[in-house]
Every structure is written in C-alpha cells, then in structure tokens.
Length: 602
Image (cartoon, rainbow, N blue to C red):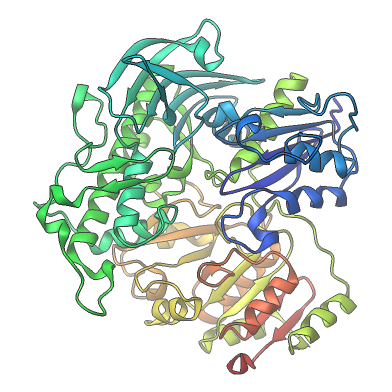
C-alpha cells in the first residue's frame, strides 16, 4: 500500500513535525532543537526541514488544542493560516488560486487532542488492541457547555479512550475542566456527538477543579519554577515527607477524587495556583539567600503532590481496564513523563495481569507523531501493527571530514583520533565527555546520541555535573546500563527492559555505594537499558567502561546546559563546549575526539 508522504504538525509549546512515508516515520523533530529556543512554538524551521526528504506531501494533519481557524496567524492578503501558507510557498502542497481556505490537503484535528495522544501511544505500543489513559494539562477546548444560560469553555483534562485498528478511538470517560465557577456536573451517558462520536455515550465529569496535571503544575510554580517544568518537582519530592499540615489534595467529592478546589485554583488553559492561605504553614517565607526548595513547606508539598497524584493516575488505569475489559493499557499526556509514578504502578498492575506501555514521547511533542499516524490509518484504512518503538527519530546527518574541521575551527577546537578506551579513561579521571552520534532522540530524554557521559562512581558526581550544567542542586541524573546486566543492579518490578528511561527504578542492595552520583536520595535511578542492536556504538562504549571499571553503567544526562534545548547539530554541540566547562566531545562514528578547553576566555 503506497500512501506517499504525510506530515504531522504539533503547534503548541512542544511544536514540531513528523514525516511519514507509507506509514513509516522518516523523521520527527521538535522546533526547539532547530531554533534553539526552549518550548518554541510554530514549527516553521521543522517544516522547511521536510524539503531535505521530499518536495511534495500528500496530506498535512495538524494537532493543537484549538483550531487553525481561530488561533493560527494569517498570511497577508491570501488570509490562509500560516501553516497552509508556508507549505504552499514551499511547494509541499498544491497551489490554490480560487480558495485559500480549507485546503484539501491540510486537515485540522486540533479538536481531538487526547485522541491524538492516544494514537501516538497506541500505534507505537505494538499492541493490536488496547485502552488509552491520557492525563494532560489542558487538551482540546473545542466544546462548550451551558451553565445557567452561560457558555462555558471546557478543556480536556483526563480521558480514557478505547483504541482499535485501523483508526477507532472511542471515548469511555472524560474529565473536562473549566475556569468558570460552577457546580461539578456528572453525566453518566454523555452524548458523544458533541465530541464527534456519533452514537457513543460516555461517562463525563465537568468541573471547576484543577486536573491532576494542573495541580502538579500549581505545586511546581509554588516551588519557584515555571509550571511546565514539572520534572523539577518530581526531583524535589523525595526531599520531603508526609506532614500533618499538608491536607488531602484530592477530595472524595462524588467519590471521584477531584483536586481540592480550596487548595488549587485552576486557570485553564494555563496553570493553576496554590491557595497558600488555606494552610498557614505554606505561607513560610525564605530567609535572605535561601532557595524556596530548601523550605520544608515546599518539599513536603512536592512530596504530597507526587504521592497523591500517582495514586490518582493508578485509579484511572484500573478504571480504564474496568471500563474497557482490556488488560493492555497505553499511557500518554504530560503526566506520562513522570518516571517515579510509572514505576509505582507496576506492583499493582503486575498482580492484576495488566500490561502497561508508557509512551516515551508523552508530551505534546508526541502529538506530531500521533496526528500523522492517526491521519495515515484513517485515510488509508491500514491495519498493520507496527512493533518498532524507535526513539532515534531525528534527521540524518552525514558530516564530511571537511565539515567537521570547519565547525571545530570556528570555535577554536582541536580534533584528534580517539577510541572508546581513551574516552573511558577521560571519564574515570573525572571528565565529562559529550557524546554526539547518529540521529537525535525525539522527546525529552537523551539516550546516548546527544548525551553527556560521566563516571557514576564519584561520590560528588551529582553536585559536580549539576554545577557545570547550571541545574538546581536537588536534581538527579540517569544511568545507561548494559541490558544484559540490569537485573543484577536494579529491581525492574517484572519488566525485562527500560530502553527509553521512563522508570525511576529502585537499585538493589549494595548498588548505591558503587554508583553514588546517579542514585537519588530515595534510592532510585532513572535508567536506560542498552541493547547492542538498538544502539551498537553506545553499547560498545558502555562495554568498554565495564571492562575498565567492572561497572556496566555510565552516568548519562542530556547534552545541553540549563534552560537550553538538547543539542541537535554538530555546530550546537561544539558551541556548547565553547560556552561551558565541558571540554571533550566524542564522535564514535568517526573515531574522533574534539577538545575545546578555552572556556575561561568566554
């Protein structure tokens, strides 16, 4: 079956594109990797990148939370939305002269945000049949409800969606949030026609309560971060502990455990606010020079939101099994990146015989993949189950020797021949070595192609690398371990592998003392298991590290500095060395080591 080229576009804060050829991913990338601006919207540079692979597209499918018609900018004079306009100007779609609106090759699916998250997870899971749990900040807002003769805008918060090939996504449960004060409404047989599901009825909660993610975002902002930086709260939580002054954050109204409206004031579609006046102890103020994260109130609230929110998501997973009768579950939406919670679910799910797939690109960056794949399966009625869960989806780079020399010379670096053995020796002498190879990882995790590597055996390694990366003191680091050795070091709770770094797993007895710089204060480590067939050069390097040290695991963190996107190109990589205290860059494909050690002059 030939379908030509299909492009998926994600428009939001994780803007990006995914290009398919005959249903297979050609490449996928977030805009920030090319523009170098964190959370950049409008994936225009990414769309231009498509020209390196094809000059014609069959279809473009667009994902966001609001429609192109109402929220995208317009091209002067023609009046078409900017994405259709750019695609037309690049020659990727047909030129239209009679009607610039509703281009037949551009299909806007922005009203289906949670289904698009489901599509990304379902089609990449390898399951032939599953139910999706979506736990998100604010999904599509294309639907309104009447409340006391007032039009109320609602936003998807949590959804349970039955998934089946080729393109059937049927809502079973939905919680929609609104910022308009109103009583909670529960409709056990909500008419699916209002969500484009003719003849379907599902369980629907409409409330003025913060969703699970919004409550987590509120605590994140209360700890001094941007709401979108929830991973920092996840890192902070084990510094806290249960405390009597922290109330139950999710009440039992109607036995559906919504976030307490007295504690969290939702500001849909933006974040939410912690109402600190509800709890006197939360009004704690830092002393001069003290960081907010050092306050007991922040640490204990971070602990509480992690523990209580992951319990709520587990309830959703079990409800999904109950609603659908299926024991294969896919999890996506922003909360899917919570690797502490993902590990927590496993004990219960294993006992219940429930198989879980957590989509590694659970954030909105994954909706470019989801919308492209759902569009493909809808348009071509294909029922092929694709079992490959690849994450090395970035564009291909084939640098010549001249290109490498030119880039390195631009930043005053030096190139020399090198080997895995020499690189490991650098690491064991307390040097950070950046690794740049192959296609970049899609999503937020660095998995050996755009990574900073270090020896995990140093007692002060976490503080050392956090300082150089310009990150907060409490943030933990990950490890990449040879697949064949993982069960000697970590408890995977029944899993065979963790290739995408989606679980913060507990280390076994005696392990923390061996690799202290990557074991968090709660005895966990976010790990990546590495198979030779998945990443042969990275596997070879870790094998050499094991040969020299007896330790089959390396300290792995993303190749970027605090507040910056992961590096994408060789130029990004060498420039990052120039602007930091990182001196070494290894190119294993070329057997080259680049040194830039004049950072003190910057």
